[in-house]
Image (cartoon, rainbow, N blue to C red; front, side, top):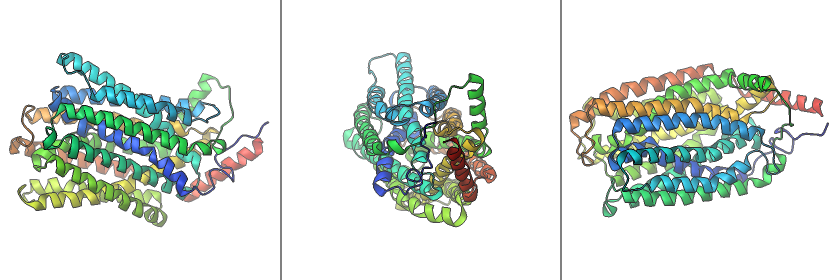
Length: 484
């Protein structure tokens, strides 16, 4: 039997990754950060509702359905990349192919026809949104799956995902600044200027394509040492059993249930954030972009605290603590406004408080997300011990499946809430009645806080610690040695 490379070769994934390798891997998430901004309900909901003029309930339903479809696409892409065998490895062919496809779909979505009937335009935009999400998945799922192949070290994985999250935040922030400070500035027609979104789409397409190609080329030299599981001829029944065992891994199920709960809150928060910024707090487009600066600085702070927290308390305890404080911190400004304890919007302290709150909450949340991504990477070996098969792509895609379903539900619920409180679609930015926004906040705040808290409590049942992970790696190494 020929010797197959594994992700645990002494000169392979257990070797310390250089800063250069981590940087090239991380640069690819610039594309993800840009896509997160553009595909976020915070941009899509008001764009489709207030700029294009589609009813809020239509928009919420459309975003929910496209997210749910994307949730099915991701596991298919992950499983496909797990099984692919080429001279460029399992992941890189997808990464290279996705660059031009992402660019074309992005331009097509943000530059929709202007003279079509509303119904036809709605169908076009939904179709392009689906296509854009598919193209992003062709890069994002294989790229995520590449991380546990690059290193099997328990703490290096946390470091690698720190680079990924850092560049993702940089990408999202950069596009946020360009969108709100330039394209949607008052001098260029303001936040409801449809033409400006088209120009933004062209720039976003170019940035995403370049970052994907740079990351793919920069990590290409790692291909010879990446895991290449042996080719197997298996019956469909056996394949389905292996997938079932992989997806029923206890720690994966725990993380997926947690994501299911938090996805609802994420969808609602994203869809309604711009409404709260403009109507509850009276912020301008410039203020919103400055709030994004807090996210960039928070990415530095989040990365700085993640490693020490993970080493001191273990990944699970650190992540639960970080998410718990982040959830409480993020809820404070709206709670204080409802209690009458926030300054009036005319006070400069409002923006200062929101900025500090965003910085602290985002710092803690980024730390938590870095750690939980590293925890998913550790499930790879835990599941492989049970199945004998490495399924990085399937695992990362499956982890994102339920959150996309529930994020879609959250976006749909935001549309329902806007309808229930009778938010005026035709109102100019910043002119919604105060009683409407108070009514919206009274429903939104307890609902999102409750599901976020539940998502944190579920994570108590995650079971893979450093010792468990190292035993799993040793078991797979022994099995590979016996198979040679």
